[in-house]
Image (cartoon, rainbow, N blue to C red; front, side, top):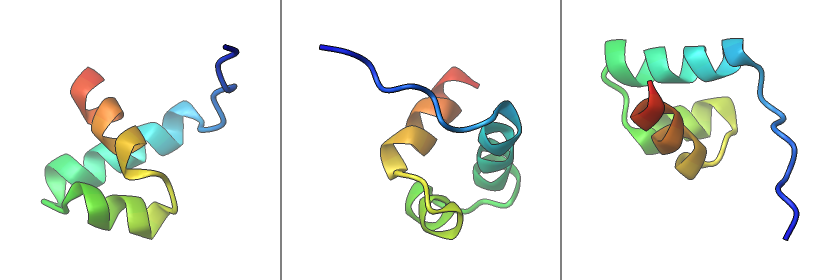
Length: 48
């Protein structure tokens, strides 16, 4: 099975992680505001 190409820039990933960590927003809220799947936000925070 072929992996999907990464479509989010490093800056957008960093922004999402910062919103989660510094602003205290939940995964769902960050995902909704940035129109990014919640699972992606969780993964980025995990690796951050």
